Image 1 (cartoon, helix red, strand yellow):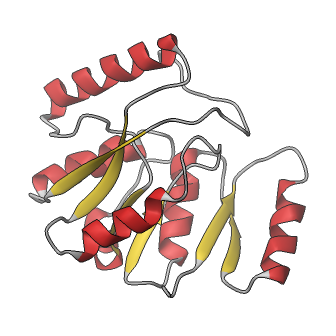
Image 2 (cartoon, helix red, strand yellow):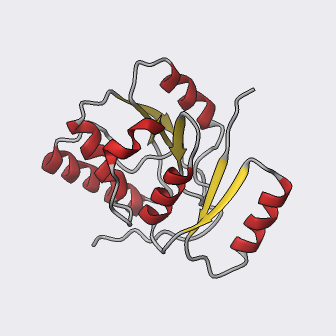
Image 3 (cartoon, rainbow, N blue to C red):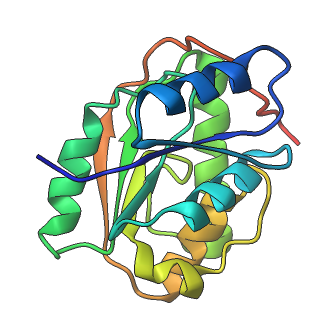
Length: 178
């Protein structure tokens, strides 16, 4: 049985999310609740910095990814063959999102020579000891690209695992062409 903690970062919900998260924390001691400024990257930075384990991972909370992927990612990172293990989404919720994603990944690859096919694919897992070296700064969704660029320049071995995108069960996408 793995020893783990779940850190949930609330960053601007307008409903009762924070109250529900505090209740989860009271029920389960491995659930930690943090808050951050608004922004996907802000939440990631707060969560990663609060993590205590040997490995850290993050994923969005919209329910579009199967959390059962985490044991597979953990197994792969523990083989010591890779520095970063992440998912590569093989489906998207709409043709528009699929096209936007393909264009973004193509442009990012051309501009920054990033050798991954799904820059924003999460969950992703890596050794916590690399956090100071990564020194993540972006407070929006560009944080995933920032990590990919830094991982490339650090010569990390990256493994992408194919994953199906599930229907969104919470929140709404804030991704747009800008």
